[in-house]
Image (cartoon, rainbow, N blue to C red; front, side):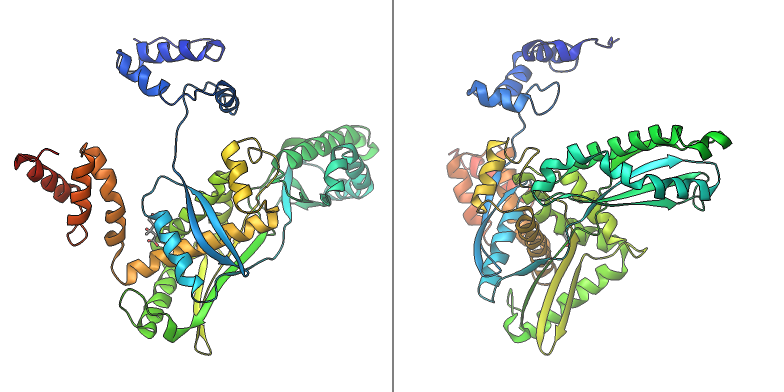
Length: 442
Ligand code: MEV
């Protein structure tokens, strides 16, 4: 039976791998080689990556790709995308080109406020805590003046604190809801540091407050943390063009737009479709978030919560016709950073930002929203015309060929053959086997 290991983090990388191989992997050199072949020869670079997280044993590569020709607010962008799913970047590129010929994308940031909460237990008299809060609010704000100094120079900082009585939903539960501007930083560390300091000040001050002392009932801090639900940090992107210019994949503009709007309407009212519809949007968004060293989990959580802000999970995009013009748009919350975190530390994230002309966080919000809208456009366009598998499996063909260990010549022949034939694992396997059994092992 396997024994738990103590002090794993103290072991060297080689020792960690040896332990893994001995206990969990095929005990030959192959597993070790697989892990080690991804080590970077540049020791400094490797050390940088090792430092991002704990217990690193290797690097995990994902493709870093470019979707060019995105016309956004009249400026041309080549958008960096990091994603494993075949066809996402091709879809983005095709959509960029489609809209390049139709005026491009228009986008605007609606708001940039972020927030955090201090969760409090208090079982005393509501008036007592409300009075205490109004008397102490300025002390709470003052307590973070040092922490805020640099952020304030960059135009950010704490905006406000309000005390919320949530005892109707949960007995004894109060909350300090704090709002922030964090300039070009995503702001998680800044917000959390501020919250913890405010919470500490609140706890200390309350201990000296006569009303609490007299009743021997004090507010108790449960926890302090930013919220990844950021409906006040919003960006909008849209495309539009006359209906008759919307013909695509052999379908005339009027039919295309009508089916397109229907597809969005379905995602508006059906949760199962909405989740998949929004997943397609996240294909574009996550890819940009990853490429630029931002936190895709927080973005995912916030966006999906926003998709159900009215009680029903629904489509994040909207489509309509107004005066003969087809309008397709998205509105999403995006708390992003272009400084701090990995953005400047990870050389590829840094380069991705350089590719985007070193955007501030507002500009990155716009570009990311466009990537999401474009991806949704591409998915619906395929779904209502050729079907999704057509483009998807074409892109997946190379993956299947690689799985079958096809030679370069075999790949060439397969790519040619599958231009007009259906791609599936079975058909590709048959094709490759046929090439090989014809004695033409290439
Ligand atoms: C696949 O990654 C994404 C799609 O399923 C999105 C959609 O159905 O809209 C194609």
